[in-house]
Length: 151
Image (cartoon, rainbow, N blue to C red; front, side):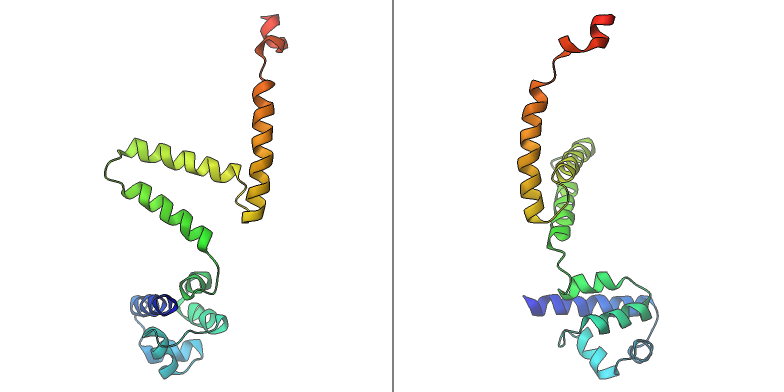
């Protein structure tokens, strides 16, 4: 699987380089890496360090974080899961646009409720939120609302 990520990185880099209308040699010079090394990265034969990726990103004028994710350096599993979840909802041919938007809103509200934190934070937040909602339901007495009795 790691080789696929590196290959994906290489393909992405090649595409970005071509979009920038740079030759392999020009990008290597701008990034301060050797031409053969950059070629190996593009072909998926080498996994570059974060420093090299940062130099290449700077030379291409693109986000280094994007390259980190593609290289598997930055742990973006949760973010990728979010993107994939949204993509699956939007691509579902059995749902109309309104239904897709409603599902995305519900999904986003659950993510906000769970705090967007790490797995541990989300678990503790979910426990607290669950207790609060149970209490919140019992406190929703409209009879004790002073505005209701005054009107």
